Length: 219
Image: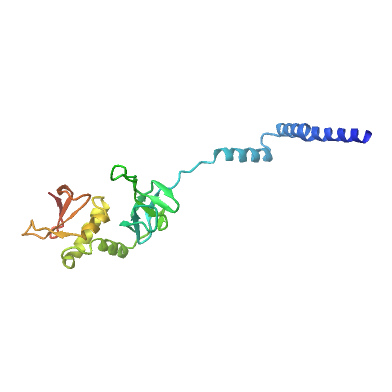
């Protein structure tokens, strides 16, 4: 009986030490530390850092780093590719999903139909604009207009003006790819004038180029 009583007292003493005396003693020690104590400052700094770690926004702006990337109608490798993006083009992602990025809002093309959007694989994208040599850029732009009328005669002026329209945002690569490049205008018989449609197929989207003067104009 005496042995059991001693065990009980020992347990109570241990509980008092662990759950009351030791925490109170440690607290008193902290309160008595000088304000510039290195241990206290380090602990305070660590706690402050944990509370003030900034939450950085997810990166959604990218550049195409691969030669070309297929734009698909769903985030699947076997989905239909309806256009291409080219190296150096900037893209904004609306969302990321299992290795794919959505680059357009959702659309419903018919009542009751499914929502569809444009998707590209994240592989082949870069947060930094890729370094492109002048030769690479020339060949890339040339690929946009490879089926232009009289390309063999006016390749340099076609390249120069195509680059100008791409740089100022008047046109996109897909505009040139859809037509194959610059088309000779039958409206101007006395001049070498060519045209391309940018942003649509209306007359207001038609951009003309006089290859002799280098002038770009609209009708």
